[in-house]
View 1 (cartoon, rainbow, N blue to C red):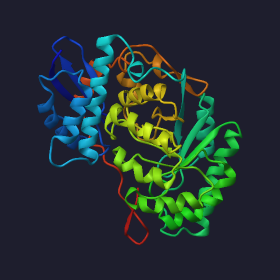
View 2 (view 1 turned 90 degrees about the vertical axis):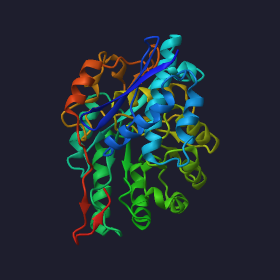
View 3 (view 1 turned 180 degrees about the horizontal axis):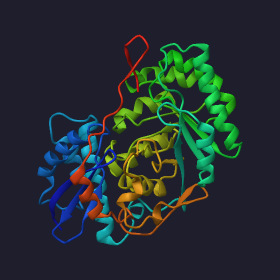
View 4 (view 1 turned 135 degrees about the vertical axis):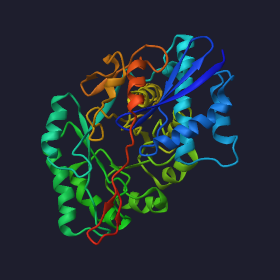
Length: 381
């Protein structure tokens, strides 16, 4: 079998899909994207296709090595995400050609269901109690909420109280048998995180995510030591080498993104590295159906898996939804807050190619918002 073509599709609301074709008619789908930089990743995928055309798609590891290392300049979110989406498509092809799901190729299933969580409240969270109640009614047993909107470098007492009150409102709806995760989203300085984390502890968050910016990873150990709440990070880390300092700092949960951190191949290795450090895997995935399917395949086969993010109904999904691009929605049905393991070959979903091509004809130009503090200076989004 040989690779004959690599196509990309810019699909609303903010995603990029790729389709890898072979001379035997087996095709694979992947989701190579950096949100807000989809066109740039599209160009990177086109460049990487020079390494792929004519190659055996079954040589996944060799092609991964070529895509990530054959150029003198390596790494970063653009190149890593381009390779990640192609890697997903190659695993999809291999599974389909052998008639088995990808998790079978990763050593077989270690669980029958994967717990998932949903988002509430948006970028500047409001009405979180009602939103949490809606997710409970939809069958979820866990939600995640942004801790705040814009956050002062050293939060006032009122800002700290607002974060705590917001999480308390969610906890009141969820009760003690469900979970709330809290995303600091890199909006907090280390000083701010150290001030707020102890206040959240009585509300028993599942974890607090990205308490400091990734460029300040040297402060993670300070935060972990001071925090009674489990610390998670990793959506802006792209390799095992990136994750190693965070794991040595003592984070409890790693959150690599299957569309950013080198795809199935690298995230599987990140999960193993985390297991050595007694940390759990909770893949980041506010993206589309292919990224979610790839994440679930890893989750089915990973012993130290915790919970899976998914984007159905997320605030970013304006004009299109995750389920709009699949022919069979059954794999993404939630049962008691979880997705049941399926046996369909490859990634286990059937992409609606006609819908994808129609969407690509429209395209998108999604960009993240630009925030500013009251004094006019830049604020982290």
